[in-house]
Image 1 (cartoon, rainbow, N blue to C red):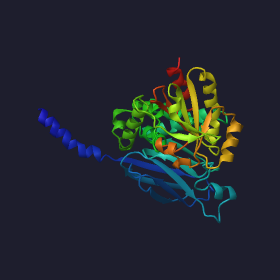
Image 2 (image 1 turned 90 degrees about the vertical axis):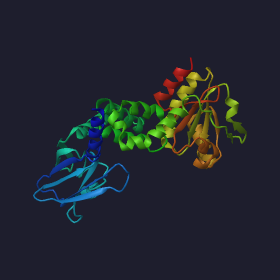
Image 3 (image 1 turned 135 degrees about the horizontal axis):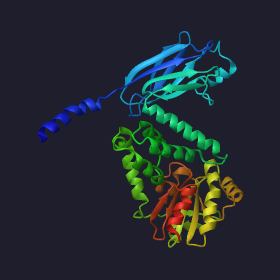
Image 4 (image 1 turned 135 degrees about the vertical axis):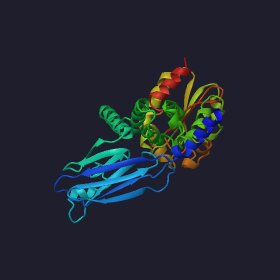
Amino acid sequence: MNKLMILATACMLPVLSNAQTAYHIKGQLPTGHQAIKAVMSYPPDDKGGEYKSDTALIRNGQFGFSGKIGRPQLAELNLIIPRSKAKPDQQKSSGEGGNMKNVGLFYLDGEINVTFDREGMASYTGGGNEQKAWEYYGSEFSKRSNAADKNTDGIALIAEATREVIRSFPDSYVSVDLLDIFTQAAINPDVVGPMYDGLSKRMHQSEKVLNWKPKLDKARDLVSGKVVAPEFTLNDTDGHPVSLSAYRGNYVLVDFWASWCVPCRGENPNVLAAYEKYKNKNFKVLGISLDTEKKLWLKAIKEDKLPWKQVCDFKAEQGKAAKAYEISSIPSNVLIDPNGKIVGKDLRGSALHDRLAELIR
């Protein structure tokens, strides 16, 4: 009996691996809309290759697409309006306009109706579970964005909305695709780790997740308190050498930033608040700038009123410290314990305060 079950399972695997998702897109435009065709672009698979594009002519205000795809994918639909017929606002928004006029975004999953109003804004009905998850993400992000102030980090809002989608749709490809945003560069295990843990077992085996899971494992190991922070020596604002080893015996936040980095400057008040709270409790901050011009670096330090030691070798991402810590984007930071072991990375906003509260009593 066991052999028969194994054989049956083996016979099913090719069928499962070749499973296809069917989609049927029905489009509707209001009377008088000047678009003559619709172009739909989407990734044909998860290999990161060139997008596939399909074109449909618009007749009597209607168009449609039908087909099959390996798994539900996010598609972008653009209405094409001849320039000779387009109004000025249509010329700017047709395609990649910031106001998303004449553009649709939806998941190729089942039958979905896309309706454009007279302003060129799209609305959707129908679709399968993936489309429901995608619309849920849109509503969650909008809710958080509308409640946030102008200084709120956009990536943080995306992370909050993504966590909510994963909680509500753990077996969704939408959850996997949203996680892509946080896995393209260096992975923050405090952000990506809980998101990964929230995915279903099926999504753990999806191609995208399997591709970046080793990076997550490495990132988790990095902040486990087992990895010794790389040593470096850089000059401070007065040209005096400063070594990381001089901070041994303290918790130290090595903070990578630059005067030209707007998100860095926005995060500086948060780091300053943490510094003021814990500076008398064995906590230090060491700023490493990726600036290339000393004048701008010094000006930013003064403007942001940063009281901790600052160092720079004016080589940007090619600097010795940036290369040693594999810094690919800023703001970025590394939290090091009194024994010189890394215990945190890319701690921004409340995550920095939460981690310090765990470690420093």
